[in-house]
Length: 126
Image (tube, rainbow, N blue to C red; front, side):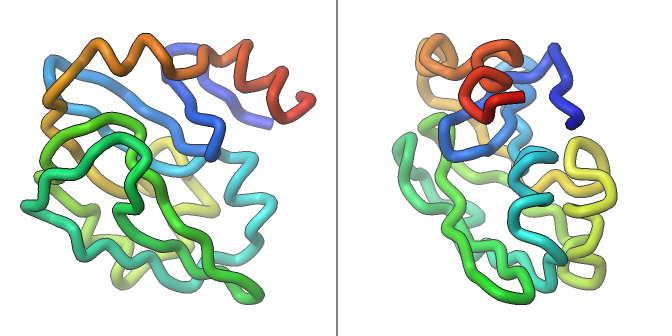
């Protein structure tokens, strides 16, 4: 199970990489393995400002559809458009080519409530 130590995590199995006031968000290796083959990623919230824990999109696998929850409040400034043609990138490279959105954070102190890699490992029993 790949759980990079430099990232932050949510109880909803999203990962967060913060650079300045922009956070890149995707789903974890654990989440993609639980979902199975991902066939579609939908994000229709670009240019919208959402609060932490609001739904920013969905990920569709062969057998299920799951909501994606925003880990930090802010404006969604970018969607990884490569996922429109290659949603399987979420399975093959969840922390790289499989990233989903970038968020301009409105309150970076919210990051203090995110999980560390060790906390996330404990959550999933890794």
